[in-house]
Length: 376
Image 1 (cartoon, rainbow, N blue to C red):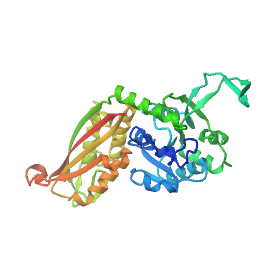
Image 2: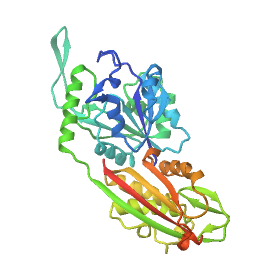
Image 3: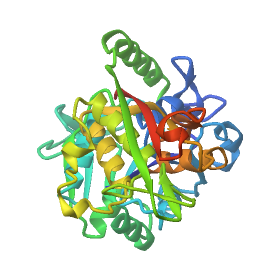
Image 4: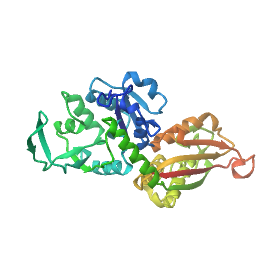
């Protein structure tokens, strides 16, 4: 399921005070919003901003959308930006919650497989009072009460329709969804997933970040891939997801995209999961002529299910012809799109074998790839 993230960061944060909105105030040496973005590294992000904040946001490397006068209007602007993009599910998150974990994101996406929506929350455990004039005026039964958090996860089409038809004034996206009759599951939230609201919250957040830096050392895994395909009759070749005109084709059970096959094997290798043949046996006729993006999407999806994100990858194509240089950026962009990562994490380059060997004789194309997976 293709998933994107909408981070709502258009508010002014008046309760926090300060010369700039809270999401842009410094937390542990950098803007709080940069910590929020880091929590979703490798995912497609739509950042909804106030028009005044565009100069601050232009170098963040994410899609920017200007928000509206209310939170609901800002969310709707983000949802509209994803319409028709192929995205099927969306996480809607407050920019002022910089400490969300990948484990929480995983729980939400798991719940979304069987529900229209899913949201994190914590049960209310303290006694609840009503107050009037600084004195206790009554008590409230806490049974069945929860403290809501974000991100809140939904299938894109239903939540977009719900926002479009909602009259406004909802407290959050769960209320919008429920008003539209959508089923929303509660998943376990996290005490550390706090929202920056008052000045003291920054000190709490810094303490949490320092604890994470001391206690957590992410695991890094490295994998290599190598593939070869011979030339055959044809008029084009598929390389790294891009079709290149050529006097020959490449022979293979699938579309013979030698670059994407090498990269897929590199990811499987980093996971100790064998190669493409283990997951998509060539003896199975359903994969005959299959597009190789199916294999790559499966490999990166398997990595994420194990709690890893792509750190970076590097693909080298070895051939005399076709010339790769004019198409390398398009290949880089297509691989990044398939894997749902920023193009800056993907390298595609080419070399010849100086007319030596089967590639030098133009009998086929070889590819080598390296992939680094980082524990999220």
